Image 1 (cartoon, rainbow, N blue to C red):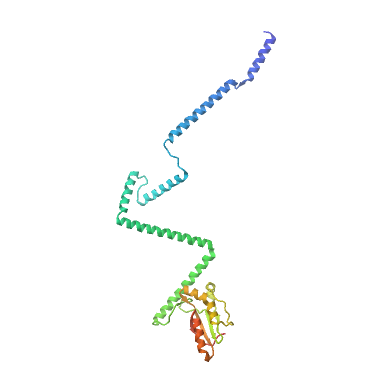
Image 2 (image 1 turned 90 degrees about the vertical axis):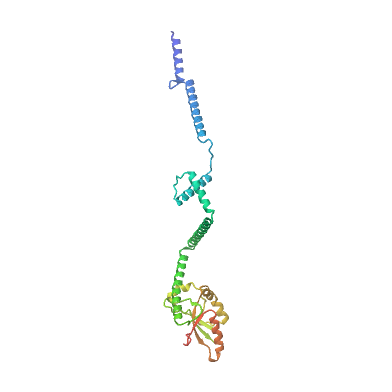
Length: 293
């Protein structure tokens, strides 16, 4: 072989080696890739057929329907538990039991029991809503409002205890005393008077009697603004004390005042008219002492 032919064969071998990948030609690699793809397609088709066979004849449910079925199953479980049944009870047996219960419910006694049960459930729902409303109001009003309500209840209980003792004393005296119960009463039955009132020739003067232990309770009252130096006409007296009177009327009680006579001897008709004005909004204790202001 000539040197020229040997060189050409070497060049051909080098070119041939450049077309190899892992010892395979490009054509062989292409065929191998196509074969692998066909296998993957075949596997995918097989999986698809298996899924179709698995879910053949089944209905796809949305999330809402699934949740409804879950809730129904939970309710059925509660019914089974209430009736003392096993959760694995056969459906046919459970259906028979439902029929028996339905037949019993159609009797007069059954309908009466169902009506009572419905009323009880309605009361329970109403109580639940009321409790939720109270809790919501308490949450909205805050701790200060709750504290105020507790304080009001505490004062009211203390007053009622004193009111009961006072009425017991009145019964022992064979009916002495009359009218509405006092609003401010000590646990021992003694009355706490709210104002000192002086009836004068020019009108009505009044001054609040301080009660240090009732300061918090006093703050809850619609107290009128008054001064012992100010003289009120009967109309103005009634106007200023109207809110306090309304408060006592709603509480089914009356506040008591101590009344002093500051009129002249010849002004007794005026005194009686002013006295009737004060009695319109307060109960009284007449004092024989000299007016304090």
